[in-house]
Amino acid sequence: MKKRLIMQIGLVVLLIVISIFLYRIGKGFQLIVENKNYTLGDVVYEAEGPVRVTFDDEIQLDLKKNRADLAILVGYGKHKIKVEVLDNNGNTIRTVEKTFSLSGKEGDLVSIPALLNGSDKWIFRRNVT
Image 1 (cartoon, rainbow, N blue to C red):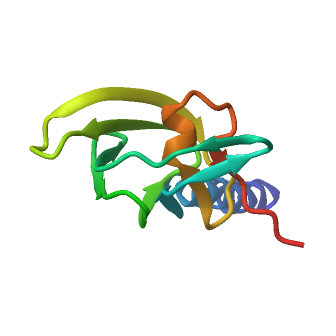
Image 2 (image 1 turned 180 degrees about the vertical axis):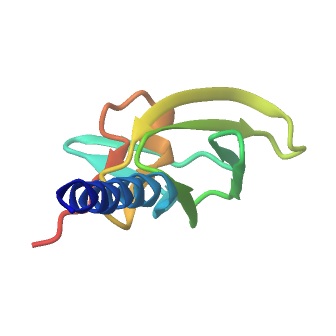
């Protein structure tokens, strides 16, 4: 009887652990991607356009100057962003790649001009009070 109870409790705990793991790897997060002018202190980062933004070699957004779009990324782990600045014919002029982690909250924001100009503050965590 005692052995059976321990087995049942162990299986319930195992199911809870597996559920938490699957939730974390399958959770989707909305990420706002802006190609708009951005001011940080005294520095103004000018929007370039058009740009092609690729996340994790899967999700691709094409943004014109002064536009924004929404990407949905899956999982809490590290993600990769690749930004290509394009000319009017769609040819790549330059490319920037970075890795990042999400804050775990909906609505994190990525500033493409800040990313392209080497700012450390190119992704913003949403603060809810």
